[in-house]
Image (cartoon, rainbow, N blue to C red; front, side, top):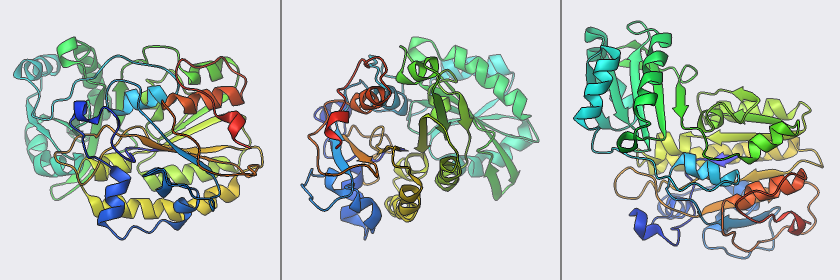
Length: 380
């Protein structure tokens, strides 16, 4: 389970990424009346300062970023055991005119927007104009993305997908190379627009190397993605994709899946933490989302079988108390929980997110991953 953007303190190289002093979970805790007793019981709060807590029900630690960048793609790549030397472009001050002109030429549509902000805010601001003129709303969320929104009654979803496929090809060029191009269809009327998250489609860049997920599929294991996991790995690494609209739906899908038998890996991404609250610098919203997850934790734990392993982590930081609205370069929490554990405790810090993938590979007797060291033997 990837709690998207829930960092637990600045990484060693945070200054290089303009993230000095960032601490997503720590600052939420310091600035709100955060109440997450179930997550605390499995060690989440102890990962902020790596405090020793003998009364936990899980092994806990933190992992340091080893890849270049502070985005979802590189974070997930590293979790799944591969290194990447590519820093994807961000355009928080707007996309260059040369790129916008090319998009207009490829689509035959006028471009409006060209700003950084939350999807719903931008669509509420520009949706009526888009409907009146058949334009394309182009914007970014402060991640390495280029998002294109259009009303489904004006530009059919299939047409919007075709536009985004062309823009994806265009943005493979070095100077415009964003991690994802995202199609954002929406519906409704002025003052009451709604994003169609199920119809959202992300066009990512193929992982630079073979990941653990590919290795698992080749060895006939199930690999299930809930949320944006399939989009991040560009349709190549998942053999069952479950799309969702928000964190709660993702958790509901997970709980349903846990009632079924499968052998392999289910990877769920809870994106609201990042897209709804981190980028929007909404401290109270982030806190509320954590508390909503906390209520679900006992239900999730009670559904685990004796030979199941639950791993909770994150892919980067996005401190809602920080300046700007970009990701922050942070260490991430790592929680290992199983009903079979006898001696839950704090583990030593991990030098790479890749230790998560290395542990999973070790569990399934698969080829050693490029990054990270397995901690499976420590999980008694």
